[in-house]
Image: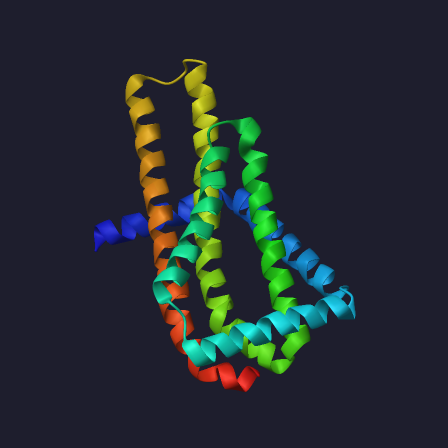
Length: 213
């Protein structure tokens, strides 16, 4: 019990210490989300009509044929790991950190654009779709992104110190060991989210396809 309390206290301390970084990442995502919503809402009616035709075809195919869940899983995994690659790259230098911030902003923009398009095309049905197919994964993904990107900010700073020869070899091993651990945990979470998108979400959506057509 004492060990558990110590871990919780340490987690709370880390959140307090990095409060500004977490807030910055969250604000970047929310800014991207807002701009994505505005961009979709200001789209021409013809573009919205084309999107609705695309969604209708998607629901028709899913209702009649189902989805090849393994293919959906692989597509989701590739998309998430491509995103993870840029977050991983941004941690190797203080100067490359804006790459990670840009990826978070774009993630929010794409999410906001998709949510608004669905609501424009299907109204309340679109809201139902987002609650089933989009929001659960995003609510899981956002805190994971925040934690990993904050760890990458630390890693970039530590590497800057390493290049100046400030840290001992023992600290160097700790820095790279922590980086490997955080990257492994981040990829594991992305794998779980991809499993949800590939196998769970299509299973939930297929009985509801006729409702959206």
